[in-house]
Image 1 (cartoon, one colour):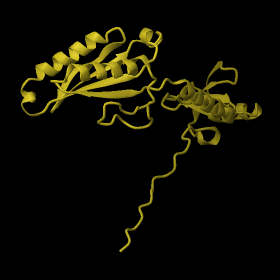
Image 2 (cartoon, helix red, strand yellow; image 1 turned 180 degrees about the horizontal axis):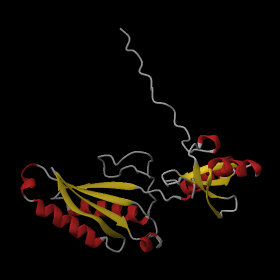
Image 3 (cartoon, helix red, strand yellow; image 1 turned 30 degrees about the horizontal axis):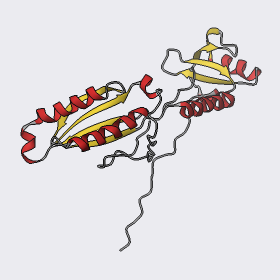
Image 4 (cartoon, one colour; image 1 turned 60 degrees about the horizontal axis):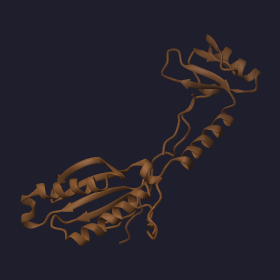
Length: 222
């Protein structure tokens, strides 16, 4: 039998800001269209004043007693708020997290190769999650993994700071390195290829992983 479809029965999001006739308290603390405090007035008087100015009466502090309202063009205000949010998202710096996996008994050549990848990520201003993977009897000597992480952090200290100290979870021990801003602006060595990160996914269990990103906004009535 076909599986019945599930419908999202949640009500659509709507603007919960009370304006004009939706403000039903008997009196309010009014701020006029110039941003000046008028004081506590009857709500009908505040509505009349907003109507005379061909503007809206907007509740900006509903939990105050009495609520604080302001006279303004609400459509214009909402548009300006949306533009500010878009500008903030546009200029927000994207945080990329790479992952590099090592073994406690990693060979010198492999260690130097992976350290080179880590340096490349740091110079690109990416964060790097370094993971030590323990297997079998190696789990009995976590200090070896920590020593390796400390050694690595020391060797890349010119380009990175330890954002998260070595921490063991199950068979893995992880450390997070964050780029030093000054180092990110320094000239890269000649002949070093740029990394080409993928986007929109978490770090995969490979040596070079994909990035993860983050936005915020403002509430009405500021």
